[in-house]
Length: 351
Image (cartoon, rainbow, N blue to C red):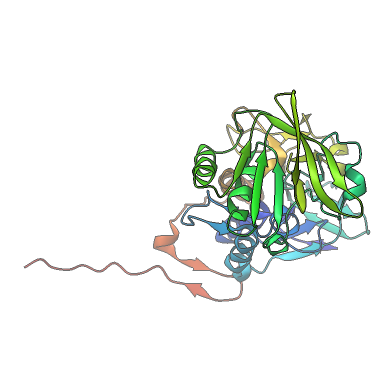
């Protein structure tokens, strides 16, 4: 039986940052993730995708963000159960929970923090009759290694952040990038939309709207796509790769059977207080939760993790009074005995 203070289900960015915030409170954490390595989608789906909204990083690759988070929490010595899915949860008489994985590994903790991101997921595929025939033969639903597209012709389809971000990134990698979207308006960040427009004006990206890919050409591999524009004009584009980026279809998996209040495949939480679910002691943070005004951003997950840990401390130690100290004043003490001291103030006399 693995015992810890906070059991975190999901080792994506939000789950990893939870370890840091808990560590500041001297709370130990153990993480469960079905993937074989930490990082969640950042490691498994788009490790080379640039992220632009992490404070202090104008741009950071998703895989590098995972590495930085792991470096940040190393001093707090978290435990990991990787390659196993959290299957069942049982509440004990003392108020703690036992979570058992699909491989029978048992974990016990007074606090459970569900940070499972989108849960298990599958890419949303466009309704193109022969698309499955070309999977791994030029059709890709996610980008793990951008160098695969070096000096190749690439057609990207979609109107969200992923389609915009990868179009921008591959403009300096592929020999030709064509972005196709069924509307003239995009759903992604305004800054990314402006950047795509700039690249289009500079001749580094071809932008076709409103249009959609209706067919894939080729025998053993993709050689081109059929495009319908304005539902009237039909034409073909030569390409080496077709990458439809229409997002992921999320599924909560076994967590959906834990008695939690679910709304639109997400876990409802009390955002006015501490992101606790309808079951006291079980929290949900990051993309897996929902509440009025919810934004599915890594940045928001970090904020939710911080407040959740404060609440968890009060549940574990109801008789202790915790006085928050800024790390710039108190420094950081790891479980390995190391301590990063806060810099001393320097007073300079003005003469």
